[in-house]
Image 1 (cartoon, rainbow, N blue to C red):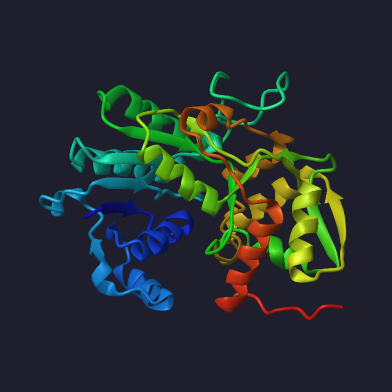
Image 2 (tube, rainbow, N blue to C red):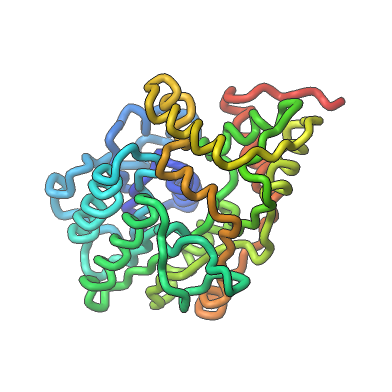
Length: 329
């Protein structure tokens, strides 16, 4: 029987993997800080609690668990300090890896941020380009990767670097939909920005392709088609039946607002993604990667487009009551 150790089971990618694997008969071992949150999530998804075993986050309490597969997708995205990124994204993840049996097929979900923005002299960042992360988040992901490469000693560990991930069960793009539904849709920066993206379903298929492959990476995975920030906002507006106008704003205003958010606790709770650290991502105009190496190595290919991804995310927000459906005009 397949047994999956899944970190980040209550997060975006992890919750999608949990649902899919349970439907296929997989037994799930889920280290979580909040077991009650996991129980509520399982009930909402109609999943039997018997199919998922909640573990404490301290690997020393796990005993002799023998997962056949592991997906380490947990991580802090919007911390207020470098130390918090280090504690979870690096130190804790390495302790989890050390607790796994040598034969376990492991995928570690890193991030495009570990490489940094696309270098100015190339069309898309590849695995051959030197890493140059610009945020504490990206630096923590790169440090984790480097520690894994130093210590894995032939263990079957694959590192994947997705760009922005979109789809159902996401919560980070809720501000995007609220903005897209308004009459004025502010866009950070006056210049057009270009991005890679990937649908969450394609991420899950990349994870499964990695389990079946001996390749280690790190690999970039993304849709073959890039998007602009204007297109992202426009497509989100289509999903929400929004009829507003996109208004580019100077980036200095976003920087100032991120400083205000960091200083006021109530704003930090309502806008967790706009930290001073993650706002640095906005300064770069191109976050484009090429997933050709992973496609050639495993045969994997992304198949979902931007509209599918955003409509899936929007439908999730409607089902969960986080947004109200706007009537078509």
